[in-house]
Image (cartoon, rainbow, N blue to C red; front, side, top):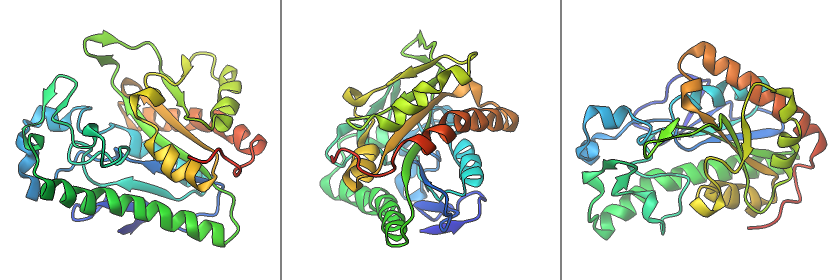
Length: 263
């Protein structure tokens, strides 16, 4: 695990932790922060355009998370490996953890994976991410620090050739307290289209991290999705980080961080 002050992650590492000792009330996760494919996976047989596409990562999500981490004095845990190698927001039992196809893209390096190859990815990509989150949660509990879990993602504006109108999605699973409070603040951003559990929701299997890192630890939690055409530049990333904070700051003051529904 790499501890970082905010620089790009070491490509030999599976996970990085920004501001590990941050004492703010949030813990930020970014499961799809990188499109890096370690050499041992032979590029998964992908062309450059697929490796750069939204299928391989969430463009802009790490930058937005890092900006929020700095403002909130919050630790952030980010995966350093493409979600096409292993999606850290999926359990090992899910076919989408190592997908053979992502939207319109075939992933040759994920076809017919032998059990040993699956176990290697779980051990070297998924478990380090989960262990890093668990370590921070336990340290914060021991220190008596309140913790809200916030996961940061971005999504493509066109999916299976269908445009998406939503710009910011506020997602939750069984514990909707933090999402409800943020949605109550949506009028603060009158020019944004903000929706609940869009463009994905629990039925799509996207709330794994909320359940195992948030609900299982009794922490109020929320997943934030930003349409990635709003994240084309550093200025865009700063604008979106500031907007998300306008929704989140008041919510952190009105919701108890603990007492979440247990997964």
